[in-house]
Length: 266
Image (cartoon, rainbow, N blue to C red):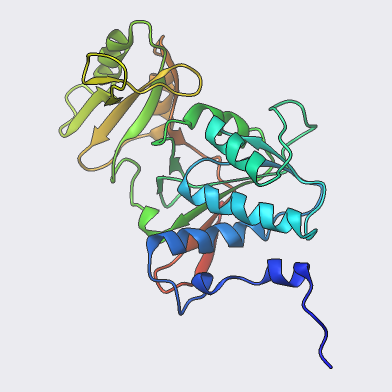
């Protein structure tokens, strides 16, 4: 007579959508990478909780494991208000940055990953809190599908820069000067459709009350990334940028065939 499956057994079973045979969509690949990263979580850890569609799968999985008792004593430091709300729905205890002795592990997605494991993050607008929390931890595990692997940062879309609202167009002009004369470079203030005003568009506002400048490069960012980072951060009015240089310790990559590889920091 066979024994009944326990809730723990059920929680640890990877759903069919996360098997190699069933993986057919990018969303399923995101779930595969997220589940693999959550396997690194141990009871008693304080986690940095990422923001975005890939990180959301990790939150769902953490909630499952906490509810069935496979994980205990886990708490999270959220990188956005949206993530804070999601974690609360999943029953993940929330801590503010600085309330816990330290962050053992952060799990988050990325918009781009270069061969040195440098990242572009923050196209969703959460780059400042992401960098503060993920830079404060011992390990930062990035979860992506292989479409996010690029030869150079800035190849596939915007590189965001968070700026204070005051004098934002002046700051935009100073950001443009950093790349003055670079063919194929452009920058603009991110806007969204207006809801309650006569204007058609209004600036996108981050959780911190700031604006976002989007930088675009036809062929990615060439040159010394750390020098470029320093030049941007020296601009009065710039709060932070979305290049995460040297922060990732591991990158979990879900490949199109459903297999997973883990890239370690050199």
